[in-house]
Length: 550
Image (cartoon, rainbow, N blue to C red):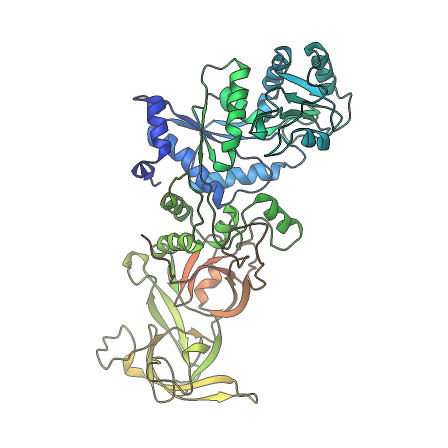
């Protein structure tokens, strides 16, 4: 696993070294997802930072599910998050927790805040609470229930816990500062009533702590030293510190450090928008390979190593920026170069007939699995009189720089013979249906032939032995480069399905197999869509990119 984080000299390292001195191994971080959706590439950055810092300094990193809103959470999301983090290559050992594990302790702290005059039960509706809190330009107004005696608030709070009131009837609010310029500090709600079954605690509770209250207490309960999160939580830090400080029962006080979240061009990353796409059936589930969810990227064929390298290349900064999606593709391509067997698949086939090749005859051609890695071995590919080639590899009236098939010109068939084009057959609409050629039997590859040279080599598939497959060419779901979830323009052609002809070896492809289709890109078997004898492949990335690494 890459450990290049230290080379950045980022502000996070400076904070850790300042806070812990020579005892940096005492660092204790956590990754705290809310189980209300699947993880995406933006979460991968947070995972790499939290687990990476702990690993770098010899400390610990917990996995904790901040499951404070049962109305939006599901065990499906919990299991998917566990799978994704393990797939990325990180290990929390035995330290997997739930915020719901601490509901009893969090409730006790809430009662102590009431008794200290730091919290009160409020009868305002949600709309009234929002109105009373004011705006960025107007201070808030105190709730008419703000000065409720602590004993009265405590009694009402216990009755809330006992289930005596309906949803929305009352809330528990922290008593902080209604004139604060930071709206988060204007007596925020810290508990609400919700008669909803929880995936972990069942029906034990009918009141649930708000995220901004439970999250810092969860960190403190676990002894977290550094709570690293995205920049959107910077304005929440005063409330984070207030909750831990006013609880008054923790030896280790966590330090919250914010960094800029990862934003990618032409992508949809907000969980709310991703869930809407899934719920509306506009994508094939959370693992649709057009999505940048980790399960989608995995299904697309992008490796965990590539994602880790990409996150390391993005670095850690305070300033918001948008990263070109091509940068992620670059690392995917670099990783796949050494992993993928090079095979032949014809994406837009047209038949090639070798007129002077004996009818009914076929022979096996030995072809290397990787031109630069002999250790990957070779395979036998059947060859015969009728083949499939790419339609783009033939041009009837070609310019001089076209080095593929055209009448009177010769090319090499990959791993086989030289062939010379003699013409073509067209249908009534003028479309080419067959290309005709002759071959030179003295030019078989691997037979010691050292004769003439040709400028072009094309790939092919035996028509008699070809495997009918599908290749899905994937493009971004969004056109815009703004990385704005709410303002994107949908791409109606985000997936193009091609009926292709592939060499026989691809019939045996299994889940996780990755290939380089000669000249057409890197592809991964889609186990979800494939059927026996009818494989489906997603193109992970094209062979080339305009991205230039710095």
